[in-house]
Length: 99
Image (cartoon, rainbow, N blue to C red; front, side, top):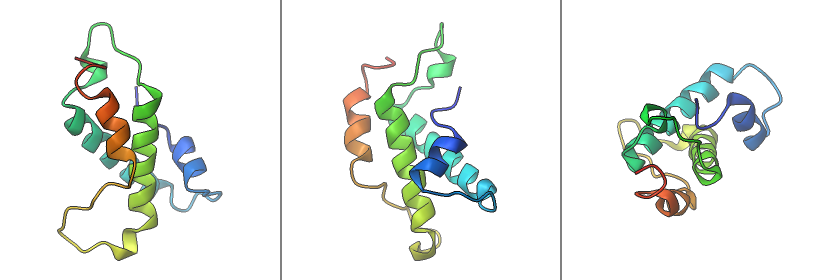
């Protein structure tokens, strides 16, 4: 189960065309990987698998959309900050939601 879908990310970024679907999916996958590391948990690995809280879904969308919308401004080989608000959403569920 994914933390967010491509359709949700396209809605978040107001993308109505399909030309960037591969790029959007890459940012979505990267954002999910970042969030899994930040939370230090994989809800799918739990028995039974745990539902993804709405705050985690929104954080993934904020991160992926932020990276997509500012991709031209990124300096290669540098750590990009996550968008304002995403860390606060994740901190709400870190440690107790899955653990």
